[in-house]
Length: 155
Image (cartoon, rainbow, N blue to C red; front, side, top):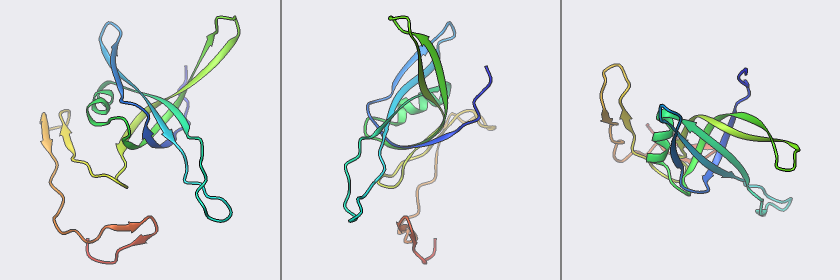
């Protein structure tokens, strides 16, 4: 089956802890997770409107699956790049049904309301097992104030 070239960017929060398991004779890691997203919609008067969130059923494989299970938990705000995968199946009543899930190619924690500590894992050219990223500079004043306004101070 040809790969679907469509890609989506999903931004939201994890509805539950990621579920890591292995499949097949080679015990390939796979993680299932559900991302809930709802835009910050407002009515014509500018007041927030309650919106039913969209539920995205997602999966990731191999090393990415293990990293997700080790790094993210229920409530984590994430941004994921994924591609749709649609399966066809026959229901118990004999009707043909379709189910779509999203295979995650990359995912990261949103830094809008949180901070993270990056740890590089093995697999690079130098073969390091784990290498901590440099700590952020202290007294950093060049942070974004909001999505539209950048501080003009030094980075």
